[in-house]
Length: 379
Ligand code: MG
Image 1 (cartoon, rainbow, N blue to C red):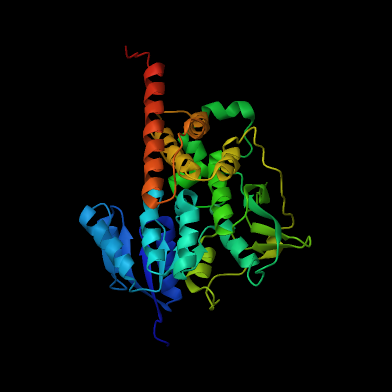
Image 2: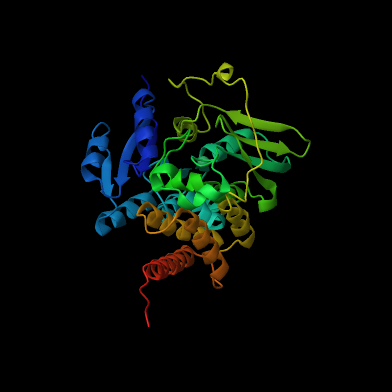
């Protein structure tokens, strides 16, 4: 047996992706886990860290969070899997790239909030950003060896989410339970709701623009119900490449952690015979208007991604708490983009300020809405 050669850090170890990564390493042990973080679930974190003996950081504790950032900046590792949920993941991504280390990025918010900053930083320090998002991993794989070849379009595939067959007039009464029932993927609650609104795809448009340095016009979306074609690239010569596989995050995690190698794994291949028919449809932006906000924010650039993401985080949380209705999620996000003041996004601090503005703006909008609904009026 060969000695572990690559030192790995896992952030968000108790989340869906973190747990899948650790599960994967049990049968594919060429990576040494040197540190793990979780936000609050301390006992789970300790259990997960036990087999490797890696250091643990509980980021809910300000001192330990500071310690984690310090650890990431020191760079005593080769690759970091950032599987933190939400905008909170950004400072870790920055610290990893500043240290010149490779970043396996499951925290898409890092790219949505500060894609331009982070890609520039990676270029400067020589880090590689490896997307751990099935669509972007697919595109990354399709683009290998294609440097310098022009791209016509990227096609991000979308399952359509839990509500893909709902009629327009049924959206008003969607419950959290309905929206959480994803047909193909097993994911955390926020991203599952984001799939139901298709906001997840909107954020993935922004993510793709940054990762692959393309304008919004060249990033298309196709509803693909079977979730086995993870995305496609159309080159200038009209040729298209697609990457296929079961809808299981373990594959993009494995790809990112071992890149540029493809070591053997116990993962089953993709049985094409099980899919006699693969379908691709134009997304319906009437029923899923949130999708349009992705192109909108990508075109606006600057702090628009941060604003859209923050508004959505707040709105989704309020929906899960049953404070607002399903259609309010889109309305609140669209309004935040509409009302966004001239916010800068040239530094991480500025991006965080934009994020804060959108959180406060959206929270206030929700409060006003709740007050109006309950008939309480403030004079
Ligand atoms: Mg995805």
